[in-house]
Length: 335
Image 1 (spheres, rainbow, N blue to C red):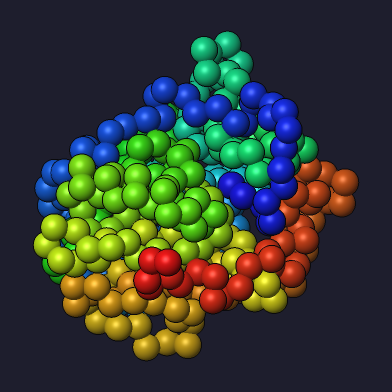
Image 2 (image 1 turned 120 degrees about the horizontal axis):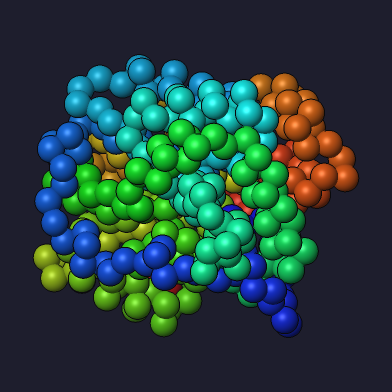
């Protein structure tokens, strides 16, 4: 979970920066058929980084219920985060479990009943933060996660442990890998907009695509949105990374809306569409999740008042958005 602009770090702390071995998988796991309930879809919603925002969850469900045809919704991790209240936490989890879901690093660490004694205890919040995120941000995230652990019950931990780390889905002719992080790790930053600016890194991502045998990956985790086109694969079609950024927080400066990724055979006609592309006849759009931002800020501050860790890390972004612009997110051509 990124915060705002990169902050260089000379001596990174361990907790919150490591990536446990059990988070990892090979890109080849995606070279398989999608499960029956995720094939031949007309509409797929990918909802990443809800972060315990209950109002955003209700709005996402409202939009999804207006869809027609064979439609599914996947929550691809970190649906918990700000919901450090047992009642809110329970309502979030109960609602999410009605749909398909992946566990993000937040849920994976919450599900660990022996986190304090396990070999991967230094995972902290499990975010695997890169160097550009400052130590204080990492330390606050670890403490936020510790507070969240006080809300989870053994039964809820069991539910979270049962969730997969990745899924395959097909919308029309588009073969998708749905992940929280990237093609190699639940908490990987390989699909971060910062990394995707680097040509050498994009070459590595192309190799992931070759091994995964998918046309696109839908991701979140790194908390800023990017639709990145990669040069054509062997079949002369483009490959894409569709990273929705965050459903439960603003994604652009001066825009209070969260974002989801809608992947569908028919175009989205509502005013909520922020940007999108068409690939293989499939419309992929970033859809704004617009809520009463004043009411949400009030609820946030009830749980995380000024001086708290989440307030210090996130409230400026919740009020004003990150230092990121709409034109930064759509990258239809490699440069």
